[in-house]
Image 1: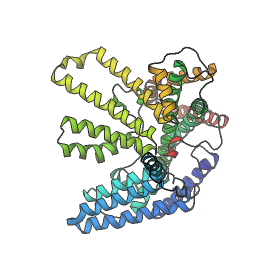
Image 2 (image 1 turned 120 degrees about the horizontal axis):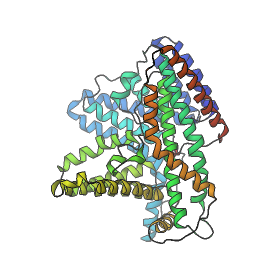
Image 3 (image 1 turned 135 degrees about the vertical axis):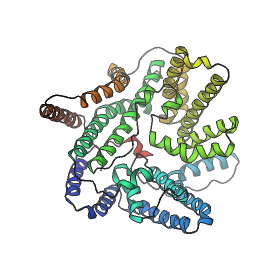
Length: 480
C-alpha cells in the first residue's frame, strides 16, 4: 500500500480505531502483526528478510552482552552480516557490472549475470537501524534485550519503508503503547497526514511529470542554459516535497498511536552553509552518519586536517552509494563532501587569520548563495540517467551558455511558484505556530473556531489530494 492511496487511508482508520479500543497489554503484539501485514502487501516473501535479520541481530546482541570480552568481535560479525544482506540485494548487479567492465578492459572473461532480484523495500533504512542497535548494545546504551522490542523497533510500519531513521533510545521506550487516548494525538497526526498528502500529490507528483520528461529525453535542439537550471531546480524541489511528504505521513501515522518520531526536514533550502544544509536535510540520516561513521573515524585520526577532509569526502561518498547503486549517486555524495570540506577550510582560515569575516554580511550572503547553487548542481548527477546526460546538463549550466526555452511556460511557472513557496516556508511555519498558540479570553469560542478552521483545512487538503491523485505513483525514496 502506498501512503498516498485510498486503501492506506482506510487501513489507517481501521488500525487506529482498533488500537485505541484494545487493552494496553495487547497493543504491542497487535502493532507488530499490523506492521508485518503492511509489509506483506508489497511482497509476502520479502517479509522473511527483516524478520530473519531481527532474529540474527538479537542472537548476536545476546553474544555481545554475555561475552563482553569478545563484544567487539561479535559486533563486527553482526555489522558484516547486515551489510552483506544489504549488498546482496542492493549492490549485487552494480558490483558485477563494474567487475565485468574491468575484466573487459583487461581482456579477461566476464562474470555471467545472475538472476535479477527485486530490491526489498526499506532495506537501506532498516539495515542502518539494525547496525545502530548492535553498536548501542555494545556501548551499553540498551539496558535490557527484548526480542519483541527489537522487532517493533525495526518493523514499526510508519518508519519501515523510508524512515525517519530512529534510534533505540528514541523509539523503544515509547513501544510500551501505554498512553491514554488523547484527542491531540489524532489532531496532530491528521495535520501531518493531510499536509503530506498535499505535498506528495499536488506538488511532488506534478513536478515529477516535467522532471521525468526532461531527464528522459533532451529537447530536439539540446538543453539550453535556462532549461538545465530549471530541470535541476525542479528535481531538487520534487525530491524535497516527495520525501518530506513521506516523512510527514510517517510522523503523522505514528502520532495517531501516541508515538513521536524524530523530524526529518527543517526548510533545507534556507541553509546558510553546506554544514547547515545537512542539519536540515534528511536530518535522521545526517545524525546517524555523524554519530556512527564520521565521529569514530575523526577520533581515530585525531582531527588531523588531511585525514579529516579525506574521511569527510569518503563518508559522503558512502552516503551517496547508500542512496543507490550507481556512480551518479557516488558523484553526488563526493560533491557534497567537497562542499563540506571547502566550508571547513574556510572556517579554519577565518578562525586563525580573519576572525572579522564572521561578521561580514558579504561573506554570509556568499556562502548562502554558494550553498543553494552547489546543492542544485549536485542534484544533476543524482537524477541523470548516465554520465553523458550529467555532463550535458552541467556544461550548459556552467560553461556552454545557450539561449532559449524548450519546455512549455507552465513548467517554468510551476517551478518558480514552488521555489517561492519554499522561500516563504519558514515564515508560514512561524505564523501557524503563533496562531496556534494564540490566547483568547473565551477559550470555548477559540477552540470552536479552531475546530471549524481545522475542518475546512482538512476538507481542502483531501479535495486537493483527490483532484491531483495519480495512481501507482511511488515515493522517490522507496527506490533506495
